[in-house]
Image (cartoon, rainbow, N blue to C red; front, side, top):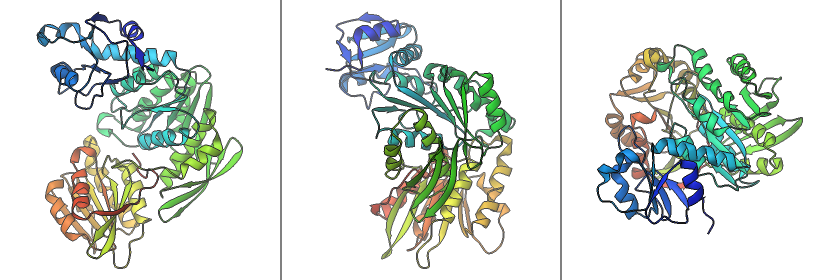
Length: 481
């Protein structure tokens, strides 16, 4: 059997003390006792809310072949008899294992960060590079202090391409993570007003994103959005970090990876991209200029990683979106159909504007309406009132007349709207939900967008329950997040 880690390598990497009758190796790594698979090692991480040591027996019952536990927790685990690796700190041990995985790998490694588009770009790269070799990439949005080392530790030795998403909402969060990942290619999708409550201004956000350049391998590459106003700051940071090759992407004529033209065509998009002197005509299975911009960054990274570019371009057409990030559904409503665009995973001012543009470009049928169901954008801090009120401009410019809002911060948007509009505001997602379900009509296009913490995914779930999808009309990831 091909192990992810032999027991000898696992002990050496984690600096562990072995106890019990250990297996020859492990097939995988988990930190969730509920979803662990047979033969995997359970790392009993202590999180903000729960301590994995409290679920060690559950992990064993569900098939774990090995427990990785902290020395200080052994007395509290009673008489639990199981194969164990005892370490000083479980998260630190996983970080050491992640570093060992990176050391042994010959994969081309790409790291992605940005205020908007990082998950979409990561998923694009996962999909298109799979046409060229074996790919290991972050699951979901495993982009924080435990998600990144966990993803690294899970990377098989024979991986061809590694794709890692690195997130942050405070300074000094990306720095230690990227030094574990040590990417050959680092992408900053854009800098925008996300997590603004934790920063003074966009310059501070850009500086935090620029930490990604500090871990780039010698001779490596930085790919930066040349259309973004913070490009000079990011470029200077990449130079200061010693990045050997710095590339711009976007619509700017100076871009190394340039979006030459983009055309939306119903549920698909067509773009022409110039990459290393070659122009590629690319079909993407979802509309949205922001998606086209992300695609150009992904094409540039694939080129630098030595991928088969014709295979990459062909794979772009079969991208599918994740739940909450632009997935589309055709719903059966009152003898007709309606279109649901699920953008419920996350939101900030930039991704809100992109989603509004996507709604604008999705035509309703017959007497149908374009409906924006918007929930609060979280982590805006003292800027929240202005950030929410400012969405009135994009909504009015897009001709969106049905604007259904949920949450206390969305009251600022409600108060900034005037004229002959269908505006509804409720204090919470749950208070708005019955009206949304009752009011949907044939021909409507309804887009649900908010920060994940507001729970607007419950509106999406209720719509899917009430109006079963006729067919999942998924296309490429349409989310801006």
